[in-house]
Length: 476
Ligand SMILES: *Cc1c(COP(=O)(O)O)cnc(C)c1O
Image (cartoon, rainbow, N blue to C red):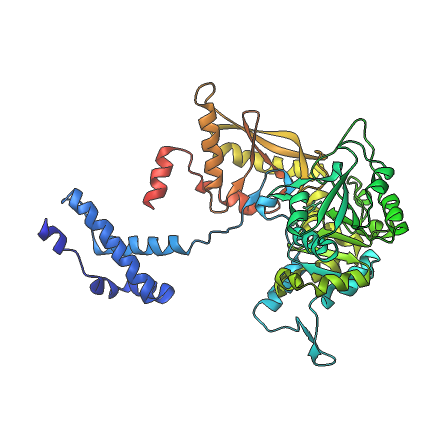
């Protein structure tokens, strides 16, 4: 055994090989040496188990290259979102427009005037880059930006309602996925929640009776991800706003998605716009950057100048501020709204939400043949009509007619469930993972968000559908 092990080349010897030289160039001496050591250790363990195990110096170098390459794989990679949910929080929500991506790129590796006033050569404010644009697009007096809408709501409550009361309807005490609950945020911000009305019905008098000398503000929250149907009553923004102002209190609205354009003009369900909320009397409105707006993750607060100024003076603003890349992406995204007629072309979120059914159906037809071929003997692939969701807590119901591939494993009965999971796993294991959803015993791939057909097709050859494919994959 000692002889077998001592026959192995040393790390130094391996470092001198030309193919290892290439690795040194790419990965550096430290990482390459480490990977060589690990490859040798692995080989030693194999030889101890089987002294006759065949090896070569080329093989060790190849193993080393494989290890280095594996380590270079980014953890966050791009995927095909075929879940049917256009704004999928777990898949990163809105896709940025070309112009937003360019804007991020421009400031990424260069210094910028992020907080520098080029006219006066004095210190500037990063919010200045979007202030005018947002005010123009919403009719608000002032605006500020933080990391996400949860942060916006938090900053607002902490600034205006610490140790005071905030009145919210019981029908609006929502939880958005990922542990964002209005009552919890309220408590952490130091504000006291005063619930009024009932789950299904809240009247103006409920708000009125909830007002005390300790009331800081009246708040409405967009129910986002659920709808109350049947015997219901809620009070409009305008009515709550008027009541608040009669008592000299600010009225704030957490719009959640917050769109800047009238969705019905694009054939989409009605959503209150930020401008409408301001016009209805909201003193402050908060909304997300990466939901219907179609920009980067951000929380935007717009409204009265004096209140926005207070928010900016809160030391927490510094802890919640956004970076230059977010600012660049947001500014570029907002700029697109100056040409609303081009939005369905330029803004991916709106382009995907308004994608015509015929268009999606045509994608399905073009890809059906190659898909059936790729899954031959493993799964039946057929085109079905389906409904996509907007997602991210906007408009909870399925409203967008779409087309999908429904894939059912050829194995039926016992083992069908396992086969279905394997099918889904094989698609997720592709170089650019394909994410669908499982529904009624089928794997459903909604094609609404599939724009890169070539990219999708070109990797079907990498599918590993059988144990043999998997073994080959591991050996490569
Ligand atoms: C989504 C949402 C939030 C949280 O926004 P993030 O940008 O995800 O932090 C808050 N309130 C409402 C009503 C929402 O829909």
